[in-house]
Length: 293
Image (cartoon, rainbow, N blue to C red):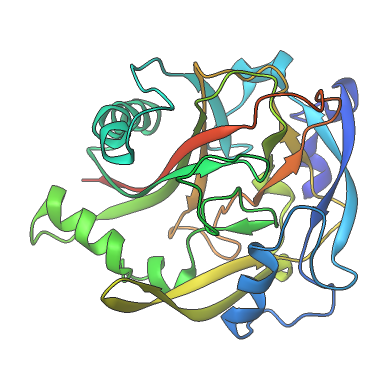
Protein backbone atom coordinates (compact mmCIF):
# COMPACT_ATOMS: atom_id res chain seq x y z
CA UNK A 1 0.00 0.00 0.00
CA UNK A 2 2.79 2.42 0.88
CA UNK A 3 4.55 1.78 -2.44
CA UNK A 4 1.41 2.67 -4.42
CA UNK A 5 0.84 5.87 -2.46
CA UNK A 6 4.41 7.01 -2.83
CA UNK A 7 4.01 7.15 -6.63
CA UNK A 8 2.02 10.37 -6.10
CA UNK A 9 5.21 12.03 -4.88
CA UNK A 10 8.30 11.45 -7.02
CA UNK A 11 10.75 11.62 -4.13
CA UNK A 12 13.75 10.50 -6.19
CA UNK A 13 13.42 13.54 -8.45
CA UNK A 14 13.80 15.98 -5.53
CA UNK A 15 17.04 17.44 -4.16
CA UNK A 16 17.98 15.79 -0.92
CA UNK A 17 20.40 16.00 1.95
CA UNK A 18 20.99 13.85 5.01
CA UNK A 19 20.57 14.48 8.71
CA UNK A 20 20.48 12.50 11.91
CA UNK A 21 17.03 12.35 13.45
CA UNK A 22 16.44 11.07 16.94
CA UNK A 23 13.81 8.33 17.11
CA UNK A 24 12.81 6.14 20.00
CA UNK A 25 14.67 2.79 20.17
CA UNK A 26 13.42 0.13 17.76
CA UNK A 27 12.52 -2.38 20.47
CA UNK A 28 10.43 0.00 22.55
CA UNK A 29 6.83 -0.99 23.32
CA UNK A 30 4.01 0.99 21.74
CA UNK A 31 2.82 2.20 25.14
CA UNK A 32 5.38 3.30 27.74
CA UNK A 33 5.93 5.60 30.68
CA UNK A 34 5.71 9.07 29.16
CA UNK A 35 8.92 10.15 30.89
CA UNK A 36 10.90 7.98 28.46
CA UNK A 37 9.49 9.99 25.56
CA UNK A 38 10.05 13.25 27.43
CA UNK A 39 13.72 12.43 28.03
CA UNK A 40 14.22 11.91 24.30
CA UNK A 41 12.28 14.99 23.28
CA UNK A 42 14.14 17.72 25.12
CA UNK A 43 17.75 16.53 24.84
CA UNK A 44 19.97 18.79 22.70
CA UNK A 45 20.09 18.14 18.96
CA UNK A 46 22.60 15.38 18.27
CA UNK A 47 22.12 13.56 21.58
CA UNK A 48 19.48 11.12 22.76
CA UNK A 49 18.78 7.58 23.90
CA UNK A 50 21.25 4.87 22.95
CA UNK A 51 20.84 3.56 19.38
CA UNK A 52 18.02 6.00 18.61
CA UNK A 53 19.82 8.39 16.23
CA UNK A 54 19.23 7.46 12.59
CA UNK A 55 20.70 9.12 9.50
CA UNK A 56 17.86 9.67 7.02
CA UNK A 57 17.45 11.39 3.65
CA UNK A 58 15.59 14.71 3.80
CA UNK A 59 13.83 15.73 0.60
CA UNK A 60 13.63 19.40 -0.32
CA UNK A 61 10.04 19.99 -1.47
CA UNK A 62 10.54 23.67 -2.37
CA UNK A 63 9.88 22.94 -6.06
CA UNK A 64 6.60 21.07 -5.44
CA UNK A 65 5.09 23.21 -2.69
CA UNK A 66 1.91 23.74 -4.72
CA UNK A 67 1.42 19.97 -5.13
CA UNK A 68 1.34 19.19 -1.40
CA UNK A 69 -1.90 18.47 0.45
CA UNK A 70 -3.05 18.23 4.05
CA UNK A 71 -5.09 15.16 3.04
CA UNK A 72 -2.29 13.35 1.16
CA UNK A 73 1.17 14.03 2.56
CA UNK A 74 -0.36 15.67 5.65
CA UNK A 75 1.33 19.06 5.33
CA UNK A 76 1.36 22.24 3.26
CA UNK A 77 3.61 25.29 2.98
CA UNK A 78 1.80 28.59 2.59
CA UNK A 79 2.42 32.31 3.06
CA UNK A 80 1.48 34.57 5.94
CA UNK A 81 2.64 38.16 6.40
CA UNK A 82 2.05 39.95 9.71
CA UNK A 83 3.63 42.80 11.68
CA UNK A 84 5.17 40.42 14.23
CA UNK A 85 8.73 41.27 15.30
CA UNK A 86 11.31 39.25 17.23
CA UNK A 87 11.76 42.10 19.70
CA UNK A 88 8.13 41.99 20.81
CA UNK A 89 6.99 40.53 24.10
CA UNK A 90 5.36 37.11 23.82
CA UNK A 91 1.87 38.50 24.53
CA UNK A 92 2.28 41.14 21.83
CA UNK A 93 3.42 38.51 19.32
CA UNK A 94 0.44 36.32 20.17
CA UNK A 95 -2.06 39.17 19.78
CA UNK A 96 -0.88 39.77 16.21
CA UNK A 97 0.10 36.33 14.96
CA UNK A 98 -2.43 33.93 16.48
CA UNK A 99 -5.60 35.43 14.88
CA UNK A 100 -3.85 35.55 11.49
CA UNK A 101 -2.65 31.94 11.81
CA UNK A 102 -6.14 30.83 12.83
CA UNK A 103 -7.69 32.49 9.77
CA UNK A 104 -5.15 30.84 7.49
CA UNK A 105 -5.78 27.43 9.07
CA UNK A 106 -9.52 27.90 8.66
CA UNK A 107 -9.04 28.75 4.99
CA UNK A 108 -6.83 25.70 4.40
CA UNK A 109 -9.07 23.21 6.22
CA UNK A 110 -12.54 24.61 5.59
CA UNK A 111 -13.27 24.35 9.33
CA UNK A 112 -16.19 26.24 10.83
CA UNK A 113 -14.05 27.37 13.78
CA UNK A 114 -10.47 27.13 15.06
CA UNK A 115 -9.67 26.60 18.74
CA UNK A 116 -5.95 27.32 19.13
CA UNK A 117 -3.80 26.85 22.21
CA UNK A 118 -0.19 26.61 23.39
CA UNK A 119 1.21 29.52 21.41
CA UNK A 120 4.98 29.15 21.74
CA UNK A 121 8.04 31.15 20.75
CA UNK A 122 11.00 28.87 19.96
CA UNK A 123 14.61 29.99 20.28
CA UNK A 124 17.47 28.15 18.61
CA UNK A 125 19.87 26.29 20.88
CA UNK A 126 22.50 28.82 19.74
CA UNK A 127 20.36 31.78 20.74
CA UNK A 128 21.41 33.95 23.68
CA UNK A 129 18.01 35.62 23.91
CA UNK A 130 17.20 36.22 27.61
CA UNK A 131 13.64 35.00 27.04
CA UNK A 132 14.94 31.53 26.20
CA UNK A 133 14.00 28.68 28.60
CA UNK A 134 14.86 24.95 28.74
CA UNK A 135 11.55 24.23 26.99
CA UNK A 136 11.70 26.96 24.34
CA UNK A 137 14.41 25.27 22.26
CA UNK A 138 13.27 23.45 19.11
CA UNK A 139 12.05 19.94 19.94
CA UNK A 140 14.84 17.81 18.56
CA UNK A 141 13.33 14.33 18.46
CA UNK A 142 10.77 12.75 16.14
CA UNK A 143 7.41 13.31 17.81
CA UNK A 144 3.75 14.28 17.58
CA UNK A 145 1.81 16.69 19.78
CA UNK A 146 -1.63 15.06 20.03
CA UNK A 147 -2.23 11.67 21.68
CA UNK A 148 -5.19 9.31 21.14
CA UNK A 149 -6.07 9.18 24.84
CA UNK A 150 -6.80 12.90 24.75
CA UNK A 151 -8.07 13.53 21.22
CA UNK A 152 -9.64 10.31 19.83
CA UNK A 153 -13.06 9.82 21.43
CA UNK A 154 -13.35 13.33 22.82
CA UNK A 155 -11.08 16.27 23.52
CA UNK A 156 -9.72 15.61 27.00
CA UNK A 157 -6.72 17.92 27.19
CA UNK A 158 -6.67 20.84 29.64
CA UNK A 159 -5.62 23.63 27.25
CA UNK A 160 -7.49 22.25 24.23
CA UNK A 161 -10.72 21.94 26.24
CA UNK A 162 -10.42 25.56 27.36
CA UNK A 163 -9.81 26.68 23.77
CA UNK A 164 -12.84 24.74 22.54
CA UNK A 165 -14.99 26.24 25.28
CA UNK A 166 -14.09 29.71 23.99
CA UNK A 167 -15.25 29.01 20.43
CA UNK A 168 -18.09 26.47 20.87
CA UNK A 169 -19.39 27.15 24.39
CA UNK A 170 -21.07 24.05 25.79
CA UNK A 171 -21.72 22.57 22.35
CA UNK A 172 -19.88 19.31 21.61
CA UNK A 173 -18.26 19.43 18.16
CA UNK A 174 -19.64 16.96 15.63
CA UNK A 175 -16.22 16.47 14.12
CA UNK A 176 -12.77 17.84 14.83
CA UNK A 177 -9.22 17.45 13.66
CA UNK A 178 -5.95 18.67 15.17
CA UNK A 179 -3.21 20.70 13.46
CA UNK A 180 0.16 22.31 14.07
CA UNK A 181 1.13 25.70 12.62
CA UNK A 182 4.79 26.81 12.53
CA UNK A 183 6.53 29.89 11.13
CA UNK A 184 10.11 31.25 11.38
CA UNK A 185 10.33 34.90 12.43
CA UNK A 186 14.08 35.51 12.13
CA UNK A 187 15.83 36.16 8.79
CA UNK A 188 17.40 33.23 6.87
CA UNK A 189 19.60 31.29 6.55
CA UNK A 190 18.52 29.11 9.47
CA UNK A 191 20.79 27.04 11.67
CA UNK A 192 17.95 24.59 12.27
CA UNK A 193 14.78 23.83 10.34
CA UNK A 194 11.68 21.74 10.83
CA UNK A 195 11.25 18.51 8.90
CA UNK A 196 7.94 16.68 8.52
CA UNK A 197 7.23 13.08 7.55
CA UNK A 198 4.72 12.09 4.86
CA UNK A 199 1.97 10.64 7.04
CA UNK A 200 1.18 7.95 4.43
CA UNK A 201 4.56 6.35 5.14
CA UNK A 202 3.90 5.92 8.88
CA UNK A 203 2.50 2.69 10.30
CA UNK A 204 0.64 1.98 13.55
CA UNK A 205 3.61 0.04 14.92
CA UNK A 206 5.85 3.11 14.59
CA UNK A 207 3.75 5.00 17.14
CA UNK A 208 4.76 5.11 20.83
CA UNK A 209 2.58 6.86 23.41
CA UNK A 210 2.90 7.45 27.13
CA UNK A 211 1.20 9.51 29.83
CA UNK A 212 3.22 12.03 31.83
CA UNK A 213 2.48 14.82 34.28
CA UNK A 214 3.27 18.34 33.13
CA UNK A 215 3.75 21.25 35.49
CA UNK A 216 3.48 25.01 35.32
CA UNK A 217 3.10 27.59 38.07
CA UNK A 218 0.19 26.65 40.29
CA UNK A 219 -0.97 23.49 38.51
CA UNK A 220 -0.19 20.01 37.30
CA UNK A 221 -1.95 18.26 34.44
CA UNK A 222 -1.76 15.05 32.44
CA UNK A 223 -0.50 14.95 28.88
CA UNK A 224 -0.07 12.01 26.53
CA UNK A 225 3.29 12.25 24.77
CA UNK A 226 3.80 10.84 21.29
CA UNK A 227 7.06 9.49 19.85
CA UNK A 228 8.03 7.28 16.93
CA UNK A 229 10.29 4.37 16.07
CA UNK A 230 12.23 4.42 12.82
CA UNK A 231 11.03 2.71 9.69
CA UNK A 232 12.93 2.74 6.40
CA UNK A 233 9.79 3.72 4.47
CA UNK A 234 9.51 7.09 6.21
CA UNK A 235 9.83 10.01 3.79
CA UNK A 236 11.04 13.24 5.36
CA UNK A 237 10.46 16.65 3.77
CA UNK A 238 11.62 20.20 4.36
CA UNK A 239 11.61 23.47 2.48
CA UNK A 240 15.10 24.93 2.02
CA UNK A 241 13.95 28.37 0.91
CA UNK A 242 11.65 29.17 3.83
CA UNK A 243 11.70 32.73 5.09
CA UNK A 244 9.71 34.75 7.61
CA UNK A 245 6.85 35.10 5.12
CA UNK A 246 6.44 31.30 4.86
CA UNK A 247 4.38 29.11 7.15
CA UNK A 248 4.05 25.34 7.60
CA UNK A 249 0.72 23.73 8.48
CA UNK A 250 0.55 20.02 9.20
CA UNK A 251 -1.82 17.38 10.50
CA UNK A 252 -1.54 16.66 14.22
CA UNK A 253 -4.32 14.12 14.71
CA UNK A 254 -7.42 12.90 12.87
CA UNK A 255 -9.84 11.04 15.17
CA UNK A 256 -11.75 9.67 12.16
CA UNK A 257 -8.70 7.53 11.24
CA UNK A 258 -7.28 4.44 12.85
CA UNK A 259 -3.74 4.43 14.26
CA UNK A 260 -1.46 6.25 13.46
CA UNK A 261 -4.32 8.76 13.19
CA UNK A 262 -2.83 10.81 10.33
CA UNK A 263 -0.25 12.23 12.74
CA UNK A 264 2.65 13.89 10.92
CA UNK A 265 5.89 13.06 12.78
CA UNK A 266 8.16 16.08 12.92
CA UNK A 267 11.50 17.19 14.32
CA UNK A 268 13.99 20.03 14.30
CA UNK A 269 17.25 19.25 12.52
CA UNK A 270 20.55 21.01 11.89
CA UNK A 271 20.28 22.71 8.51
CA UNK A 272 22.86 21.42 5.99
CA UNK A 273 25.33 23.99 4.70
CA UNK A 274 24.21 26.76 7.02
CA UNK A 275 27.06 29.27 7.66
CA UNK A 276 28.43 28.97 11.21
CA UNK A 277 27.89 32.69 11.87
CA UNK A 278 24.25 32.69 10.77
CA UNK A 279 21.61 34.30 12.96
CA UNK A 280 20.00 31.73 15.31
CA UNK A 281 16.55 30.65 14.13
CA UNK A 282 13.58 31.88 16.13
CA UNK A 283 10.05 30.78 15.33
CA UNK A 284 6.45 30.84 16.52
CA UNK A 285 3.96 28.03 16.60
CA UNK A 286 0.58 26.96 17.86
CA UNK A 287 -1.55 23.86 18.18
CA UNK A 288 -5.18 23.92 17.20
CA UNK A 289 -8.38 21.93 17.09
CA UNK A 290 -10.30 22.61 13.87
CA UNK A 291 -14.03 22.24 14.41
CA UNK A 292 -16.34 21.05 11.62
CA UNK A 293 -20.10 21.46 12.18
